[in-house]
Image (cartoon, rainbow, N blue to C red; front, side, top):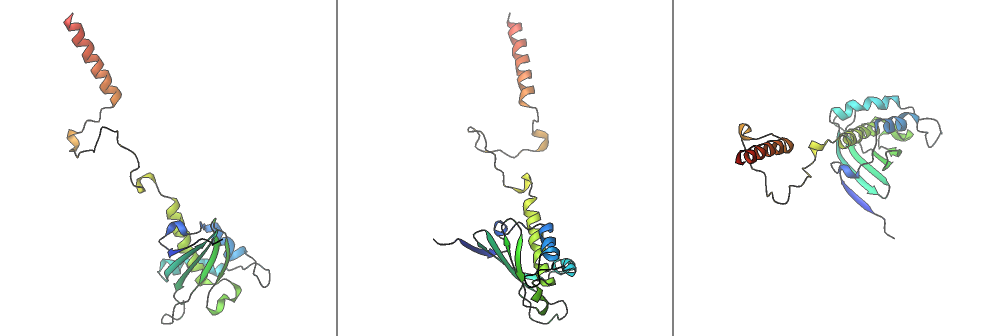
Length: 183
């Protein structure tokens, strides 16, 4: 039995786990450390939003493996701007619960650092935009009646906005008048 695996850029929104702000907060602050079993309490990680906004999170990639999703990126150092970017990654359930994360910086021994948090924020923002699509964001899905091949362009003053119900009333009234005149 082969496992399903799909990879792609972070622009593949359908591959991303549905991480919400609360999932992000739960992982950074309330998740237990695998070493000490104490909460991670990474309140400083919540400030990593600024790194996301400033564009320090780059080359985001996503890999889907059954119900789990691995997202990785390159994040610039906060103190050494000329240093090679760091490589944080997270693994999460499709539903959004972050299971684990790691980074190759010195602070990531506790499984959370600002670079991991900076990776979580673009995922959360992408999901928020993806899930807030309106009907006008989608391509037209309705069908034209069978006899209509297309809708032609008309200037506004030439368009008749009268409803079908009103047109029927006018037509019935005019046919009643014409039939009574023939008598």
